[in-house]
Image (cartoon, rainbow, N blue to C red; front, side):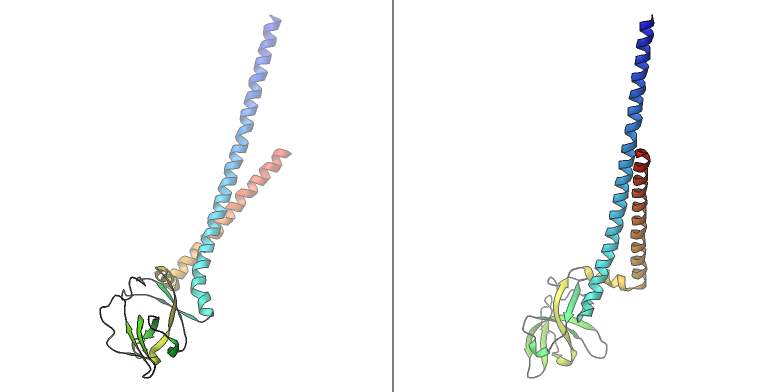
Length: 206
């Protein structure tokens, strides 16, 4: 009979050890989950902030080095330049423009409407361009005077013009500020979750 009681005590000790192991194993799982959540929040916040910075740099930096930027509103130059593309136009001497170059120019100096067409011929003697839209069957009816010339298209970024046009509006600026604020909040949440993980590790060591 004493032996049976001893076995009973040993069995209860073993069961108690198993419970302790099970309880102890839940801690690392929870901490790992908090740590993963913190990294995800921080990464998402950084991506949002970087995305806004990149879009703003597309609008600000080129202007600082002499480029003009325009959003394409019509399909006269498709498929080479889709509607909604962002154009980077660089000023230069009109005499240096060659055939097949794409240029930006004022339709007339009175209404300040801007047109982007391909040069068919640069008439240096008369100081005019003969131009044509790629999607148009005929050349433009009137020659373009050098005085209307803005510059040559140096780069085209499809579909980005719409995004940057929105960002330059009041609503777009508010939306960009909200995205940056959200990114900051996500970073703070990620940092707090990481701090909790660090404190939990210190408590366990003690």
